[in-house]
Length: 293
Ligand code: NAP
Image (cartoon, rainbow, N blue to C red; front, side):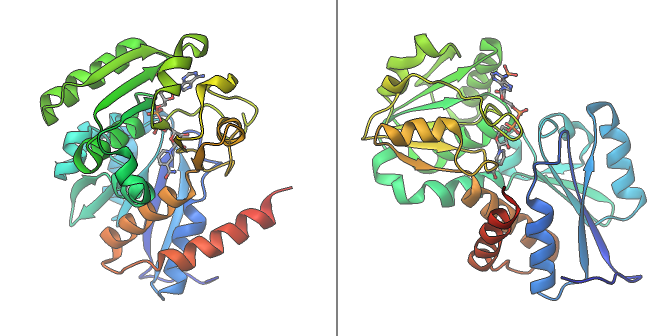
Protein backbone atom coordinates (compact mmCIF):
# COMPACT_ATOMS: atom_id res chain seq x y z
CA UNK A 1 0.00 0.00 0.00
CA UNK A 2 1.02 3.64 -0.58
CA UNK A 3 3.55 4.83 2.02
CA UNK A 4 4.19 8.43 0.95
CA UNK A 5 1.87 11.42 1.15
CA UNK A 6 2.66 14.78 -0.37
CA UNK A 7 1.32 18.34 -0.52
CA UNK A 8 -1.63 17.52 -2.77
CA UNK A 9 -2.93 14.48 -0.91
CA UNK A 10 -6.69 14.79 -0.29
CA UNK A 11 -7.89 13.92 3.23
CA UNK A 12 -11.10 11.98 3.92
CA UNK A 13 -12.17 11.15 7.48
CA UNK A 14 -14.41 8.72 9.30
CA UNK A 15 -16.09 9.93 12.48
CA UNK A 16 -17.92 7.77 15.01
CA UNK A 17 -17.84 6.61 18.62
CA UNK A 18 -16.65 3.87 19.01
CA UNK A 19 -14.66 3.48 15.80
CA UNK A 20 -12.16 0.69 16.40
CA UNK A 21 -14.39 -2.03 14.88
CA UNK A 22 -14.48 -0.32 11.46
CA UNK A 23 -13.10 -1.85 8.25
CA UNK A 24 -13.77 1.35 6.27
CA UNK A 25 -10.17 2.67 6.51
CA UNK A 26 -8.91 -0.58 5.01
CA UNK A 27 -11.52 -0.51 2.20
CA UNK A 28 -11.06 3.13 1.22
CA UNK A 29 -7.26 3.26 1.45
CA UNK A 30 -6.93 0.04 -0.49
CA UNK A 31 -9.28 1.38 -3.18
CA UNK A 32 -7.40 4.73 -3.43
CA UNK A 33 -4.19 2.80 -3.91
CA UNK A 34 -5.68 0.44 -6.47
CA UNK A 35 -7.09 3.32 -8.51
CA UNK A 36 -3.88 5.34 -8.13
CA UNK A 37 -5.63 8.25 -6.41
CA UNK A 38 -3.73 10.63 -4.13
CA UNK A 39 -6.13 10.37 -1.16
CA UNK A 40 -5.87 9.18 2.44
CA UNK A 41 -8.74 8.01 4.70
CA UNK A 42 -8.33 8.32 8.47
CA UNK A 43 -10.62 7.33 11.38
CA UNK A 44 -11.38 9.82 14.19
CA UNK A 45 -13.09 8.81 17.43
CA UNK A 46 -15.44 11.75 18.01
CA UNK A 47 -17.85 11.93 20.96
CA UNK A 48 -21.22 13.67 20.34
CA UNK A 49 -20.23 16.94 22.07
CA UNK A 50 -17.52 17.48 19.45
CA UNK A 51 -19.70 17.15 16.33
CA UNK A 52 -19.89 20.88 15.60
CA UNK A 53 -16.13 21.30 16.02
CA UNK A 54 -15.57 18.34 13.72
CA UNK A 55 -17.68 19.87 10.95
CA UNK A 56 -15.78 23.14 11.35
CA UNK A 57 -12.55 21.13 11.11
CA UNK A 58 -13.62 19.56 7.81
CA UNK A 59 -14.07 23.08 6.40
CA UNK A 60 -10.98 24.57 8.04
CA UNK A 61 -8.70 21.80 6.78
CA UNK A 62 -10.31 21.74 3.34
CA UNK A 63 -11.03 18.02 3.68
CA UNK A 64 -12.73 16.43 0.68
CA UNK A 65 -15.33 14.79 2.89
CA UNK A 66 -16.09 12.36 5.70
CA UNK A 67 -18.01 9.22 6.52
CA UNK A 68 -20.26 9.39 9.56
CA UNK A 69 -21.04 6.32 11.61
CA UNK A 70 -22.88 5.52 14.81
CA UNK A 71 -24.10 7.28 16.86
CA UNK A 72 -23.87 10.52 14.80
CA UNK A 73 -25.79 9.85 11.57
CA UNK A 74 -28.89 11.76 12.66
CA UNK A 75 -27.34 14.43 14.89
CA UNK A 76 -24.87 15.59 12.22
CA UNK A 77 -27.65 16.82 9.90
CA UNK A 78 -28.17 20.17 11.60
CA UNK A 79 -24.57 21.18 10.80
CA UNK A 80 -24.87 20.58 7.03
CA UNK A 81 -25.77 22.98 4.21
CA UNK A 82 -27.70 20.61 1.97
CA UNK A 83 -29.02 17.03 1.88
CA UNK A 84 -29.58 14.61 -0.98
CA UNK A 85 -33.24 13.63 -1.43
CA UNK A 86 -32.53 10.18 0.05
CA UNK A 87 -30.72 11.52 3.12
CA UNK A 88 -33.52 13.99 3.70
CA UNK A 89 -36.25 11.30 3.65
CA UNK A 90 -34.18 8.85 5.69
CA UNK A 91 -33.23 11.50 8.23
CA UNK A 92 -29.67 10.16 8.53
CA UNK A 93 -26.36 10.90 6.78
CA UNK A 94 -23.36 8.58 6.46
CA UNK A 95 -21.38 10.52 3.82
CA UNK A 96 -20.50 14.21 3.59
CA UNK A 97 -18.97 15.87 0.55
CA UNK A 98 -17.20 19.22 0.95
CA UNK A 99 -18.18 20.92 -2.30
CA UNK A 100 -16.00 24.08 -2.25
CA UNK A 101 -17.05 24.97 1.29
CA UNK A 102 -20.64 23.69 1.02
CA UNK A 103 -21.23 20.54 3.07
CA UNK A 104 -23.65 18.13 1.38
CA UNK A 105 -25.00 15.09 3.23
CA UNK A 106 -25.77 11.78 1.51
CA UNK A 107 -26.95 8.38 2.65
CA UNK A 108 -25.10 5.62 0.81
CA UNK A 109 -26.24 2.90 3.27
CA UNK A 110 -29.44 2.72 1.21
CA UNK A 111 -27.43 1.67 -1.86
CA UNK A 112 -25.60 -1.00 0.17
CA UNK A 113 -28.93 -2.37 1.39
CA UNK A 114 -30.40 -2.51 -2.15
CA UNK A 115 -27.37 -4.41 -3.47
CA UNK A 116 -27.56 -6.85 -0.54
CA UNK A 117 -31.29 -7.59 -0.71
CA UNK A 118 -31.77 -7.54 -4.49
CA UNK A 119 -31.40 -11.36 -4.89
CA UNK A 120 -34.39 -11.74 -2.51
CA UNK A 121 -36.64 -9.10 -4.06
CA UNK A 122 -39.39 -11.50 -5.17
CA UNK A 123 -39.60 -13.06 -1.72
CA UNK A 124 -39.73 -9.71 0.07
CA UNK A 125 -42.28 -7.95 -2.14
CA UNK A 126 -45.79 -8.37 -0.73
CA UNK A 127 -44.48 -10.08 2.44
CA UNK A 128 -44.32 -9.27 6.11
CA UNK A 129 -40.94 -7.99 7.36
CA UNK A 130 -39.53 -7.15 10.79
CA UNK A 131 -36.82 -4.57 11.42
CA UNK A 132 -35.14 -4.57 14.83
CA UNK A 133 -33.80 -1.12 15.70
CA UNK A 134 -34.89 2.47 15.16
CA UNK A 135 -31.56 4.30 14.73
CA UNK A 136 -29.87 5.75 11.65
CA UNK A 137 -29.37 2.48 9.81
CA UNK A 138 -32.87 1.19 10.60
CA UNK A 139 -34.12 4.34 8.88
CA UNK A 140 -32.07 3.53 5.78
CA UNK A 141 -33.43 -0.04 5.82
CA UNK A 142 -37.04 1.14 6.03
CA UNK A 143 -36.58 3.73 3.27
CA UNK A 144 -35.01 1.10 0.99
CA UNK A 145 -37.70 -1.49 1.70
CA UNK A 146 -40.49 0.98 0.97
CA UNK A 147 -38.91 2.47 -2.15
CA UNK A 148 -37.54 -0.69 -3.77
CA UNK A 149 -39.06 -3.84 -2.22
CA UNK A 150 -42.72 -3.01 -1.46
CA UNK A 151 -43.36 -5.25 1.59
CA UNK A 152 -46.96 -5.78 2.68
CA UNK A 153 -46.34 -4.95 6.33
CA UNK A 154 -43.37 -3.69 8.42
CA UNK A 155 -42.89 -4.45 12.12
CA UNK A 156 -40.45 -2.21 13.94
CA UNK A 157 -39.10 -3.70 17.15
CA UNK A 158 -36.95 -1.48 19.36
CA UNK A 159 -35.71 -1.25 22.95
CA UNK A 160 -37.08 2.30 23.22
CA UNK A 161 -40.64 1.99 21.96
CA UNK A 162 -41.07 5.75 21.62
CA UNK A 163 -38.20 5.91 19.07
CA UNK A 164 -39.96 3.30 16.94
CA UNK A 165 -43.16 5.38 17.07
CA UNK A 166 -41.29 8.55 16.05
CA UNK A 167 -39.76 6.69 13.10
CA UNK A 168 -43.19 5.42 12.02
CA UNK A 169 -44.67 8.91 12.19
CA UNK A 170 -41.82 10.27 10.03
CA UNK A 171 -42.10 7.58 7.35
CA UNK A 172 -45.91 7.53 7.29
CA UNK A 173 -45.78 11.23 6.47
CA UNK A 174 -42.82 11.27 4.08
CA UNK A 175 -43.52 8.04 2.18
CA UNK A 176 -47.29 7.68 2.63
CA UNK A 177 -47.17 4.13 4.01
CA UNK A 178 -49.49 3.02 6.77
CA UNK A 179 -48.83 -0.70 7.33
CA UNK A 180 -46.42 -0.26 10.23
CA UNK A 181 -46.63 -1.92 13.65
CA UNK A 182 -44.28 -1.12 16.52
CA UNK A 183 -43.20 -3.36 19.39
CA UNK A 184 -40.87 -3.14 22.34
CA UNK A 185 -37.83 -5.42 22.08
CA UNK A 186 -38.57 -8.20 24.55
CA UNK A 187 -37.56 -11.54 22.96
CA UNK A 188 -40.16 -13.83 24.65
CA UNK A 189 -42.93 -11.52 23.36
CA UNK A 190 -41.38 -11.15 19.89
CA UNK A 191 -41.27 -14.86 18.91
CA UNK A 192 -44.50 -14.92 16.87
CA UNK A 193 -43.80 -11.56 15.22
CA UNK A 194 -40.36 -12.72 14.11
CA UNK A 195 -41.39 -16.20 13.07
CA UNK A 196 -44.21 -14.87 10.89
CA UNK A 197 -41.85 -12.48 9.01
CA UNK A 198 -40.39 -13.43 5.63
CA UNK A 199 -37.47 -11.04 6.22
CA UNK A 200 -35.90 -10.13 9.58
CA UNK A 201 -33.31 -7.34 9.73
CA UNK A 202 -31.09 -6.58 12.72
CA UNK A 203 -30.26 -2.87 12.61
CA UNK A 204 -29.10 -2.60 16.22
CA UNK A 205 -25.61 -2.81 17.69
CA UNK A 206 -26.46 -5.97 19.67
CA UNK A 207 -23.79 -8.61 18.94
CA UNK A 208 -21.28 -6.16 17.46
CA UNK A 209 -17.57 -6.46 18.33
CA UNK A 210 -16.45 -6.60 21.15
CA UNK A 211 -19.80 -7.82 22.59
CA UNK A 212 -19.93 -10.81 20.24
CA UNK A 213 -21.76 -13.07 22.73
CA UNK A 214 -24.79 -10.75 22.85
CA UNK A 215 -27.77 -11.56 20.67
CA UNK A 216 -31.22 -10.14 19.92
CA UNK A 217 -32.77 -13.49 20.89
CA UNK A 218 -31.70 -17.00 21.75
CA UNK A 219 -35.17 -18.46 21.16
CA UNK A 220 -35.00 -20.92 18.24
CA UNK A 221 -38.74 -20.66 17.53
CA UNK A 222 -38.16 -17.06 16.34
CA UNK A 223 -36.87 -18.47 13.03
CA UNK A 224 -37.91 -20.85 10.27
CA UNK A 225 -36.51 -22.23 7.01
CA UNK A 226 -38.53 -19.89 4.74
CA UNK A 227 -36.90 -16.76 6.10
CA UNK A 228 -34.15 -14.40 5.08
CA UNK A 229 -32.32 -13.03 8.12
CA UNK A 230 -30.07 -10.03 7.47
CA UNK A 231 -27.75 -8.66 10.17
CA UNK A 232 -26.20 -5.28 9.33
CA UNK A 233 -23.32 -6.02 11.69
CA UNK A 234 -20.16 -6.93 9.76
CA UNK A 235 -17.80 -7.46 12.69
CA UNK A 236 -18.13 -10.35 13.47
CA UNK A 237 -19.04 -11.57 9.97
CA UNK A 238 -21.55 -14.08 11.40
CA UNK A 239 -23.19 -12.84 14.61
CA UNK A 240 -24.67 -15.13 17.25
CA UNK A 241 -28.10 -14.00 16.01
CA UNK A 242 -27.27 -15.20 12.47
CA UNK A 243 -25.82 -18.47 13.79
CA UNK A 244 -29.11 -19.28 15.53
CA UNK A 245 -31.17 -18.31 12.46
CA UNK A 246 -28.96 -20.51 10.29
CA UNK A 247 -29.37 -23.45 12.67
CA UNK A 248 -33.14 -23.21 12.05
CA UNK A 249 -32.66 -23.34 8.28
CA UNK A 250 -33.06 -19.62 7.51
CA UNK A 251 -31.07 -17.98 4.71
CA UNK A 252 -28.62 -15.67 6.45
CA UNK A 253 -26.91 -12.52 5.18
CA UNK A 254 -24.19 -10.61 7.09
CA UNK A 255 -23.27 -6.92 6.80
CA UNK A 256 -20.07 -7.19 4.72
CA UNK A 257 -21.68 -6.81 1.30
CA UNK A 258 -23.61 -3.76 2.46
CA UNK A 259 -20.38 -2.33 3.85
CA UNK A 260 -18.59 -2.73 0.52
CA UNK A 261 -21.40 -1.22 -1.57
CA UNK A 262 -22.07 1.76 0.69
CA UNK A 263 -18.30 2.37 0.64
CA UNK A 264 -18.22 2.15 -3.16
CA UNK A 265 -20.98 4.74 -3.46
CA UNK A 266 -19.20 7.13 -1.04
CA UNK A 267 -15.89 6.62 -2.89
CA UNK A 268 -17.62 7.64 -6.13
CA UNK A 269 -19.08 10.78 -4.53
CA UNK A 270 -15.65 11.94 -3.31
CA UNK A 271 -13.49 10.95 -6.26
CA UNK A 272 -15.78 10.67 -9.30
CA UNK A 273 -14.15 7.27 -9.89
CA UNK A 274 -15.86 3.88 -9.70
CA UNK A 275 -14.57 1.61 -6.94
CA UNK A 276 -13.80 -1.95 -8.13
CA UNK A 277 -16.17 -3.44 -5.54
CA UNK A 278 -15.64 -7.16 -6.13
CA UNK A 279 -11.84 -6.84 -6.02
CA UNK A 280 -12.08 -4.89 -2.75
CA UNK A 281 -14.51 -7.46 -1.29
CA UNK A 282 -12.06 -10.26 -2.07
CA UNK A 283 -9.19 -8.35 -0.46
CA UNK A 284 -11.28 -7.44 2.61
CA UNK A 285 -12.24 -11.07 3.23
CA UNK A 286 -8.55 -12.03 3.15
CA UNK A 287 -7.71 -9.12 5.49
CA UNK A 288 -10.41 -10.19 7.98
CA UNK A 289 -9.24 -13.81 7.90
CA UNK A 290 -5.63 -12.83 8.49
CA UNK A 291 -6.60 -10.54 11.39
CA UNK A 292 -8.93 -12.99 13.18
CA UNK A 293 -7.54 -15.24 15.90
P1 NAP B 1 -27.66 3.91 16.09
O1 NAP B 1 -28.27 4.97 15.27
O2 NAP B 1 -26.82 4.28 17.26
O3 NAP B 1 -28.88 2.94 16.58
C1 NAP B 1 -28.59 1.89 17.46
C2 NAP B 1 -29.81 0.97 17.61
O4 NAP B 1 -29.42 -0.13 18.43
C3 NAP B 1 -31.01 1.62 18.30
O5 NAP B 1 -32.20 1.06 17.79
C4 NAP B 1 -30.81 1.21 19.76
O6 NAP B 1 -32.01 1.15 20.51
C5 NAP B 1 -30.28 -0.20 19.59
N1 NAP B 1 -29.49 -0.65 20.73
C6 NAP B 1 -28.24 -0.26 21.07
N2 NAP B 1 -27.82 -0.90 22.17
C7 NAP B 1 -28.84 -1.72 22.54
C8 NAP B 1 -29.05 -2.65 23.61
N3 NAP B 1 -28.11 -2.89 24.52
N4 NAP B 1 -30.21 -3.32 23.68
C9 NAP B 1 -31.19 -3.11 22.75
N5 NAP B 1 -31.07 -2.24 21.72
C10 NAP B 1 -29.91 -1.56 21.62
O7 NAP B 1 -26.74 2.94 15.21
P2 NAP B 1 -26.83 2.65 13.64
O8 NAP B 1 -26.00 3.62 12.91
O9 NAP B 1 -28.26 2.52 13.27
O10 NAP B 1 -26.09 1.24 13.54
C11 NAP B 1 -26.73 0.03 13.97
C12 NAP B 1 -25.91 -1.18 13.53
O11 NAP B 1 -25.85 -1.26 12.10
C13 NAP B 1 -24.44 -1.16 13.99
O12 NAP B 1 -24.10 -2.45 14.43
C14 NAP B 1 -23.65 -0.80 12.74
O13 NAP B 1 -22.35 -1.33 12.73
C15 NAP B 1 -24.51 -1.47 11.68
N6 NAP B 1 -24.31 -0.84 10.36
C16 NAP B 1 -23.74 -1.60 9.37
C17 NAP B 1 -23.54 -1.05 8.11
C18 NAP B 1 -22.93 -1.89 7.03
O14 NAP B 1 -22.48 -1.31 6.03
N7 NAP B 1 -22.95 -3.20 7.13
C19 NAP B 1 -23.90 0.28 7.85
C20 NAP B 1 -24.51 1.01 8.87
C21 NAP B 1 -24.69 0.44 10.13
P3 NAP B 1 -32.57 2.47 21.29
O15 NAP B 1 -33.33 3.26 20.28
O16 NAP B 1 -33.41 1.89 22.36
O17 NAP B 1 -31.36 3.20 21.82
